[in-house]
Image (cartoon, rainbow, N blue to C red; front, side, top):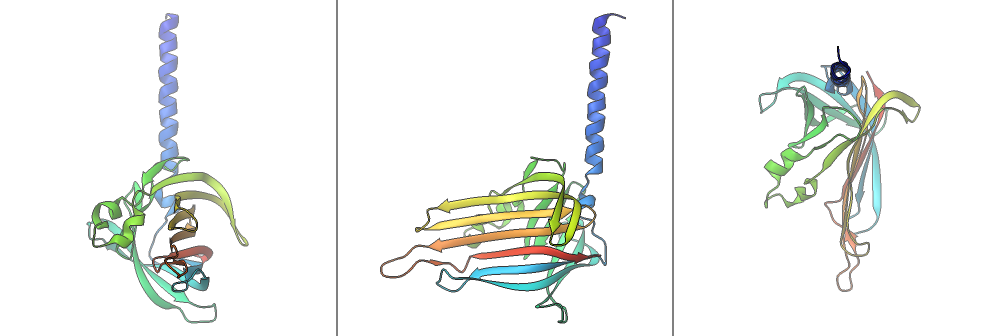
Length: 247
């Protein structure tokens, strides 16, 4: 056998082996690994809810405990298998849980779609690897952004990107061995002292658990007019979810 033929066989074998390893890595990093939904599963978080006082630059943060519990396996309005998730809330550990919201999650096999307040987000998408990106708010952009809903405009164009795949993460006293970071948005529009807008979003998912940390902020500063002072609009809102317990 000639050297050229041997070289060709070697290169083909190397390519096939690389493809096999790549496919195996994709199989290992599945959506279910980081979003293992099943009926009865729950995650409890510390919720820090941030806002500004009306017509003010004074911010306040109110802290709660919330529990996201998978209530039932259902079919969503697009005909996809999904799970109904009930959120329970209380001010402190000594109080009784009260349900206050309902969400829906769907593992499509290649993505995790999460419906919150009638908005559908693509929180995770295959392949799970560093620097991979996708348009996480595409359903909002194509369906719900219209002149009648100007308050959703800031959701447009968010490019979600994986970072720190399979990295450890410490949340208080909880040490998580394998997590992925989803960087959603880090944007500042305008100039301080004048109109400016901040859009920020990031989520962390732990293998075998699900969402363990989330931080979101949208703020709109309205500059002074005449003798009045500048202030943050009612559209400003921010939340931080930090996992404190799960089953």
